[in-house]
Image (cartoon, rainbow, N blue to C red; front, side, top):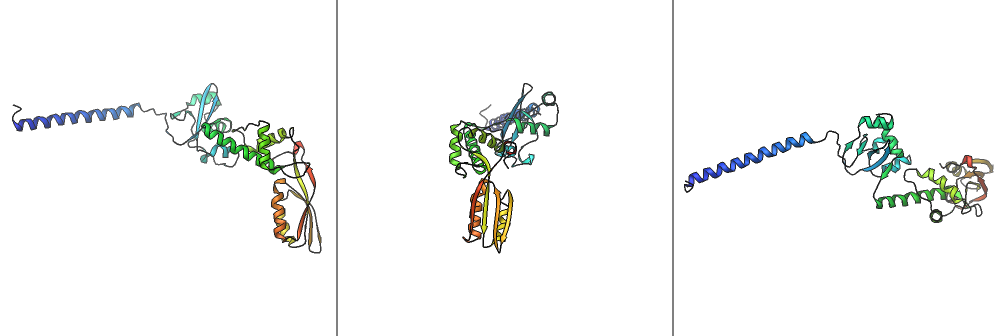
Length: 283
């Protein structure tokens, strides 16, 4: 019977149709099953920085934008939406598993996702690769060393230390950068540690500035760079001013006096005004 060409063609067509029907039915069933078994408590996110915190015996995570966590902790970034990819607390960000409300309430005493996200952001541990961790630590170390150099002086020479010298001293005392604390807090800690190893003081410089040319224009610009002005006198058109400055502004003020007065002004370092422990802050 199969030798009949017409019957053979009809049989082949029927077989093809049955195979197509079977494949289509299987595909539809698979799609429905996928929809049925997709967990409803999963959120998929990509290109994230994860901050993790363990509390109440459970692990909680939040998904953040890369490089924004440190900015938030240093108070550079203040908009929470610029830091968080989602105002949601997870048990596992990579798997998209959202934390249960009862677990949040038991561990944090609240179900408020905003409050919990901010606590994890402040106290949690930023999860980064080993390479990223080294880059971040080196960057923070340099930033802290720069702040120490800007805010401190060698009391023997009355001059700021170079940043490179501060960096070397920090490594010599085995200072360990804490990624979950901002640089300003760690700067004060470094200064106290360095005092045991080298002559260094958190201080202001007291300067006497004399400008026989462009004195009024110069004064307007100096006010923005001075911590305070102790005295101001005018002899004819010559400005004589005594002021306190942060050591980090010394070079900028020196350049300003030279350029504004076209070499007709000069600056004298009178002494240092030390800052006591109670007053010690980093602006």
